[in-house]
Length: 618
Image (cartoon, rainbow, N blue to C red):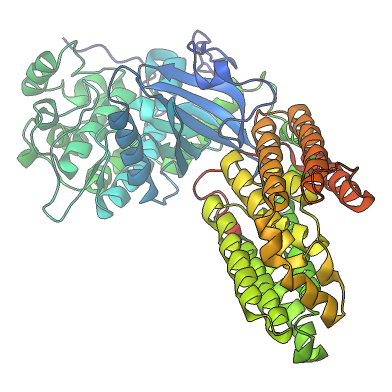
């Protein structure tokens, strides 16, 4: 016998508010599993170097979903964290997560949750999604009397999900896991389809086989692993709407085989539970829930078109849902975006400021190096030299990730020009080759993703390698920082002749160029490169531990190593006689350290670089 319909199961119900109060979800109700991203994240640390956890939204066998604050774009996001089983096949987890992200990335629709990003570390695969401020349809139905929605509310849900599915199907994507838990209902009344984890993407050969789903909402072809198509999603959509209207799950069972028998038996006619929905509406549900795909309609909007006229005004349903969620959330403290912004470093509160600062640093350092290289190129004329400096600055600002290589290549050309002018072509070739080769080291190590890498051009521009460690340690990951600082240190010795290119006197410049081979044969430049690399790696590794304090401490430790290296490298070039470093290198080392500590205070500790994060600067 079918379950008797409540007296208020039609268009309207008395007794507002309709919430039972039994399943209200307070903030932080779920408990984070051990070793989850939320449990292992220290207070100041950021998930993936970018997301600050607000609360654990959901957890289960699939992993967990965190509500996070995106410190870069200053907004809330949902981060789905899928654990990589160390004893299992981690690659399959990554492949499945990537497939979900790709399936969703094809779809930009107001009724589909947007996927922003995908990332993997050594323990989790992460899918970063649009945050929907609201509840799932399952939560909404669990909170209302009888577990059913009024007709116009179902009309709004049906219209929205049908539109989302039609768009997905038109773009070659099947959802294959439509259920109330995967339908999000926002506080503004909008409805969005989420979780394309079971989605199938059409190929040239058509749709493939079923990948899984949820028993109770899967049709026979999905339960048995046969080929699926649009009609599979139509069946699940009809099952969800049937449940929302009646409170019944006619195909729910403990096993797929048991569910299959219930489907073959058929659901009780909708008119048994909702007398006002007989005739065409009941027939539409029977068609959509037919055991055989051949008996169902293909287009979800066709199903919606047959049902909606009987359910009432979807816009009225949206207003009713908004009223329900307003009643439910009336005693909850509203989310304070200002409080979360206040946790971010000052420079992060202005989204465009970090990129602008990186471009400004790149332009300034590239122009400074061009200025120092102007003396050997003075024969080109003052206008040409000015144009060269301006062009270097513009290039540094426009393409920071290429400015490092281009700037040091320019220094190599200047070195060659000086050598040729002095009648020393061999020395010029050596200097040019070393400068150009080292110029491409930072670009290669940084992978084209580090917008602050051009800041190391300040070393040859200022005539001392002691500014390299602080700058490279702030801008790059440890390995890239070490290689970049070492390369910039060697180029500093080659290009500047330990300060000779500061002179506008061609004879002085020529003398410096002539000394390049001897300088490279001495241990001093290589010792300086080693200390520069070690100090930069120390600053980078310490700075990436997550807090401003450790990042600043890393800069101070790097300064100590730099000053020691400056003294020892200088002694190696004077027959092993140690002497205190001169004031200029020490002052510049201290100044660069202070500048980087200020940058850490303004913009936070260096973030873990990931593919694509700095593409806006490339």
